[in-house]
Length: 457
Image (tube, rainbow, N blue to C red; front, top):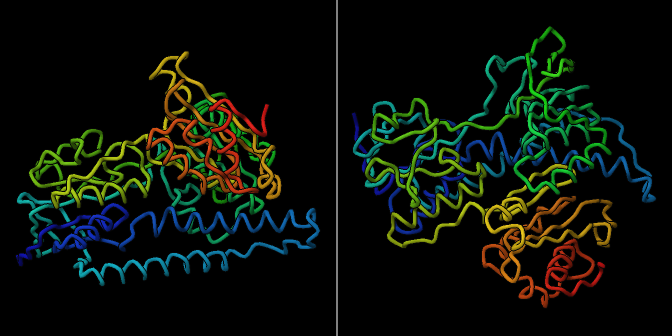
């Protein structure tokens, strides 16, 4: 076995892995990055980027459909799946090439092959051993399914849904979380009849209840049916359709069933436990500095319990690189990581929901204000409904910012600054938000909680 020695070896070339590799290289370390597929991982090739490309296609379809009401005489002659695929693949290809060039410019050694962790620490790839003073494990996640439901044919995961060669007529989406509502939204924009089945009482159930209700209202207006608070009792398929039996005795039939019940950690078969890394329910156990139980072995991204978001993975990869380099970086709490669901309308949030804030501080210590986007000129211009909600501790800081409406994902960074810096509404109220912009909705909420509302009673 040929041995190669580096300052650090990264197992997994997705968001967290390549971010760690790049930052380590910037800090003067020699780095090997082991990836069995393509650098960029799920987010670039089978997740965030291609999904958002299709969501843009869906947005264009909605704009064309509504153009006549604005005086632009346009119509949709049809949806071309082949051109949609070419557009999506073109975006991914450009981003992939750019990332490859960036890694090469940083002189990072990219190892193509399936790696496994071995004690030492090191990563074995075929007959080669890549030994590092430190090893970072960043193997990502996979699409879960439910017991008794076998993926294949007319039963899709998000990955196989992206590869569909047709725009179906009817789809059942099992799961009302981020992935489920994004696919439901884009399919509906393309003319598909969609039913979402969610076992919990609300769509996007991890969000503030006001956002869930706002999204549910918007989906009803768009003709997306939501079956909430029901579970799947069984699934059967035929040559040309799939049938879902629910525990309330009803049945749903469609061309395809999308399984969108979350993602599991990709930790099986890569030698983690054999090398001394402790797992719980498949996730890697780390301390608050992302160290595992194995000496000089770290873990980042979706394999670490918490939010499974690409930007969280980026942050953790950078954090571990700087920790290895002795820079003692500041850890970003999970509550300060922004969350965005890119449906129509979008849902965006950071910090505590109102219910979580009440649990943490008590009902009498929490104040919340909701500003309806109906009062926001830019939202009216682009034709979106929704709200901006800010949660604060009475006489204290802002602890949560929650938004629902088209394009509100672009506003959440301001919310992250407010929550992360523990700003009081009184601190932000004097700042000017440009008019007309959707950011004014946040400004109005800050003004109201500071006791001086302008465009609200």
